[in-house]
Length: 490
Ligand code: FAD
Ligand code: SF4
Image 1: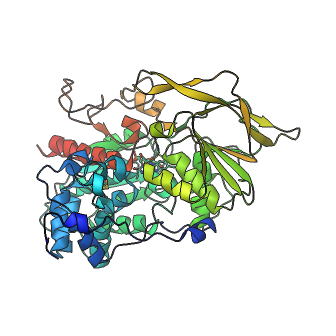
Image 2: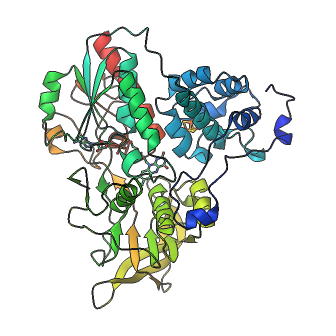
Image 3: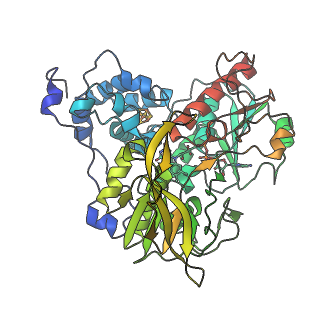
């Protein structure tokens, strides 16, 4: 399909792949919400690209994908070449095509945004799914083995991206994870209606085909000392994520029916994938913050209130809908414009019947005489002066308190990293808020980008940035591998 005119975008509307019908979603369908493009749909959408000469989409994409170039290859039906180009910047393109908040990244910067941005994420997903299904695999036939070996701690997006780039540089990567499946939060946090877990299985097969080795069910710092890895390997990359749960310290959070978000999501992902649901562990390991809780309440016909307006909150409300909750409310302390969750996810949640209450700050969780939740005491807020990060503060309005009735309350205030003792003992510095200190480009430290204060140790992803996005973790894992290769192959 060739471009017909410079104004083709006016005739061809933006169109996302078809979605699972609403009645199936609300009846408990956990399948990926967005279906797949066929070649004709992908070419149709790719044909809308203006090739505007200023690819803001590429600049805004954290891995700087060559978007106009692969859109052109799709139009020419050169899918294998498009897949190779996607992988040249992004080690996990089919994942990012599915879960990136494109409205804030590539698509939000598309020159056509006003008319309907090119569906960049959906085309990226199409290219890589189609190529992998047809048997295409990254070509490493020209790569010379260097004899160097690197341990990667954490099989989340940062660790997987790092391992991919190490393999391409001829460095043998051995990935350790405490859980028995790869993916980190891709596997255990993000629900299957956003990311089908078979996508991660395929990616594992691709990485193993590239020579990456996985040693799963091994906790570094517990089953295996980091010092042993430093002795055995030429370098170590840490992509251990951010798992310190923010509970908000609300009075009443110990009541029956109050759940932290991550174990709730993990449990659902285990049910959906057919794994044993009735445990507070993954592969026998306790989920952080959930060690003492076993069974999740049945949500069928219950009133659920989710506290928090980020991606985790959106995943919780939409999961609650699929679990048959009668009424699902999301309470957020600022207004809709300031909510961190992706606008697309908010729209999907609304369509599925979630009620949003903005400018409501929780004060306490109220219980009945039996210790069961009966609601959340909230106060209305207005936006005040900016805080130290430039975000307007939520200022409580006196006298506006009310009770949001609930049978179940899910706390989704987010996560932060923490630097374990076994890292500090090896000379790795952390920040007061728990991030591993890793060098940035040209920061004057004299260290390579992503090198920690221990020269053999590199780090990236959520454990360095704090809880963020899949694509930023991928970018850091990828770039840390380049630093490691610079150090080992110089
Ligand atoms: P993780 O994905 O957390 O992976 C870290 C890995 O390290 C884990 O597998 C862990 O088991 C392992 N590990 C940790 N310590 C050890 C140890 N000592 N020994 C061995 N292994 C260890 N981002 C998006 O872009 N889009 C979304 O839609 C989105 N939705 C999200 C929904 C939820 C519920 C959550 C919680 C996050 C979401 N995110 C989303 C954020 C995204 O998932 C993370 O930013 C991303 O996964 C971070 O990647 P990472 O590799 O740094 O860490
Ligand atoms: Fe857009 Fe994410 Fe793909 Fe970049 S990686 S082009 S931001 S969907």
